[in-house]
Image (cartoon, rainbow, N blue to C red):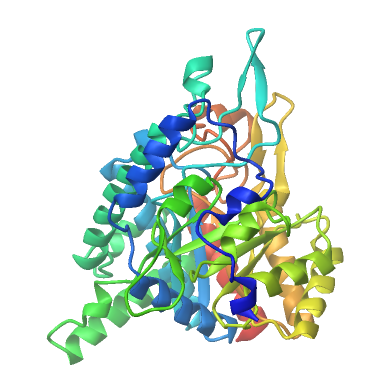
Length: 452
């Protein structure tokens, strides 16, 4: 079945399909030159890493592990700096340590990093000072500054995105391999912000417990286990700009099929999952594990056809279903989807994206999210999966390791009038460092209620 479906597939067969969320490049000659250059450059990741991730996702689908996927809404080229990368890795590692400690299960770390440079938008253009200009679609496509020239889609950004991703990946690997994940330094946990929270005693006890466990292992094994210092860390992004992703999609020696070697995992957005569209055409031919964002508006039958199209062999670890219904509709919509997927026997990883369905604007026009709304959808998702006899195996969060002020609420009770204090995102609001750690702790509590 897969051979028939992929008979006429190639990394560029998507060009024969309707394309959404990809603006027209004014200079097609320059676009082709950039595409060919990008196609000739070395891969950013390896097929071995991709297959290792897929095997671990199969464990998640089987209820043996948990997926933590998180990172920036849209990475900025200008933010490709050591402190930013360090902070992102730090928060994801510390979140995973919280989850591991509380759940007693392996945690798979997948960052929205080293390639999350493009974003979908609801409209192609916006009015600025009486002039209609392109909407900002992420640094991979155009610039953020509100000038018509900077907002014009630029093929050179494909090459710049590749180099920025490469720099980020190189530093990520160095951090992961050289002891940055070392658990010997609890002073780096910075949990003072929780002192006024009802769970602070549990936080403090958790950090103490981890520290004691590390010292115990050292006592019985003088040569410190490398697993205390080194971790696996995978990258992912929304494969929105198909020129970027298809240029880095290629066969590898002694393996069947094609791999997108720009990231370990890519996902299909809520706006680009049309069965007859270009993005689905591209996704059906790659061997990477793929995510599918599912939220309103959607149809269950179409979703089932989409899963079958992308994974006709029902390979475990291939599909991550990332639900994003919002706190007010998750209880109505999620049970129906779970039952339909189970009826078809699809071996999917279930993940909850509690961010995108809970976005709103303040009276002052600031786009934000409420921490309580986010955790409310997480709680509902766990409860629904538990009642349906299903396993919620992951969360998908937009977050940063920096102390931004973009989402209201959390342990410190960030108020709407404080948002402008350090509001940095170019697109969607993210959880900050403190809110992210608190979220990890609360996610772990919900997991324990459901599965321990």
